[in-house]
Structures are given as C-alpha cells and as structure tokens.
Image 1: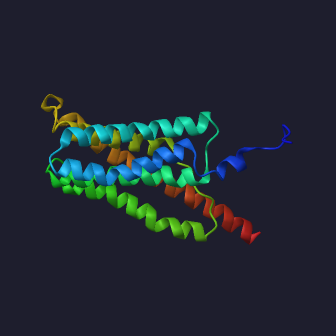
Image 2 (image 1 turned 180 degrees about the vertical axis):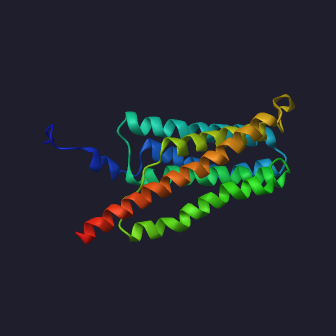
Length: 198
C-alpha cells in the first residue's frame, strides 16, 4: 500500500515504454527517412515528417509532466532525439546549400563539446545538470528556424530570412546555455572540493 509519504516517482522513473519515450524513439527512427526524402527531392513529404517530429518534442515533455511519466530513460532519450533531429536537418540544408557550413559546425560542435565533457563531469560524481530555460529556448528556436528553411523549398513565399534569423538566434542561445551549464558544473565542483577539504 502506498501512503501519502511514500513517493511514487522513483517507480515511474524506471519505466521504459512510456508515451514520451515512444515519441522520442519514433522521432529518432524518422531521421533516416527524413534525410532520404529531403535529399532525394521529396521536400514536401520531408518537411511534413520533420514538422510532425518537431511537435512531438513539445508533446512528449507535456505528457511526461502531466501524466507522471518522467523517466530516467526519457531524460536521456529526449535530448538525444533533439540533438540527432537537429543535426539531421543541418546536414540536409548544408547539402542543399540552404545553410552556411560554419553555422552548422557551430551548432554540431557545441553538442560534440557537451558530449565529450559529460564523462568527465560524471566521473567527478557531479549530479546531472537539468536543462535550463535558455537551452530549451535554443532548441525551440533551432527546430523552428530549420523547419522554416526546409519549408522554403516547398513554399517559396515563406522566404529564408525568418528561418536563418531563428537559427542564428538558436545558435547563440545554444552557446549561452553551454556557458550556464559550465558555470553550474564549476560551482558544484567547488562545493564538492570544499566538502572534501573539511
């Protein structure tokens, strides 16, 4: 029997086949299909698929919180799906000369930096840092801007200024979020060092 004082969240966190996790997994599985469609000239189908996938990023978070389906797997799977999803469209747009290569490298390079530093932080015993508002805003701006740029191949009236502007803003916020993560990691390392020294 579960009393009011007994949290049920740990059991939920161990769940694997939750609705948010399934949405994140489907988003990951759609990436090769999207790349094939977009690069082969089937832009309309590719844009629709990407837009649906981008919306699942919003819904899986809402569902996870409102239905108490936050899981440890989801905390890893959702950001991974976001990173792969963004990288896929960056590659596709660079391949179609719709996005500067240096801008794509700036975005992907940030993810590679975080990925390379993650094991170091983990080895030091620092608890995983939650995604901050700046990071969430950066991801949203990148998904919006990249989708807009891709849609410009189908609907020319959309233009590319809005899409590029959103991608530029997302890239700046991406690195700003990284600086905030680094500051928080450094703060936690100092606290741990002080505790060890006492």
